[in-house]
Length: 233
Image (cartoon, rainbow, N blue to C red):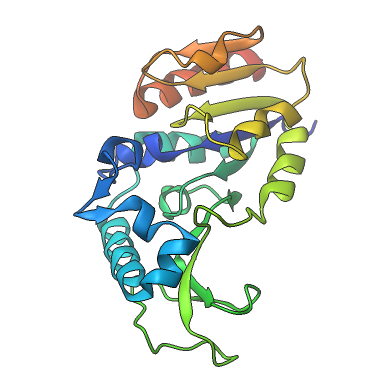
């Protein structure tokens, strides 16, 4: 009998429990950087070195962070279910936590790409990117992330993945920012749907959702036990 497919949509809240700050909590500033200046295509065009410095800092912070209980619990579910992660996060904590199917909606900190040709992508690991570091096409390397004002090229693959879900889980995101917020609309209406969020998201006043009012680490572990008890009989 094939394993049931769990699709998890994750956001900044799951990384926050590993010590990584979120845009929402930063008040528009992050380590002294104005988010609008460093996380937008306009900011890159205005001052690319400032943007590089910001993402070099984020890359260093993410490298020093460790997967938390939520990351590990999602990975452990792969023993019993097919688990696909669709994450809005640019860190690699899901992978380091043990998850094997991870789709990054907004890019990856550990990668760089050509400023001119977005298909030219290379792994830089924890290393900084400097102005003057060039891709094979001779263009400046930039962070392989999606900034405000840019298209989200992985939206279609993510929507297809959500459409295949037997069980949908949302953790660490209130899904109020589009286009990512639209992903839940691609799930089949009748499947079980769960959200793990310590607050009461306005978005979830619709039928069919079960709300775990917990932080990510506690909530994912509770949900994992529930899923194993109900679906592995």
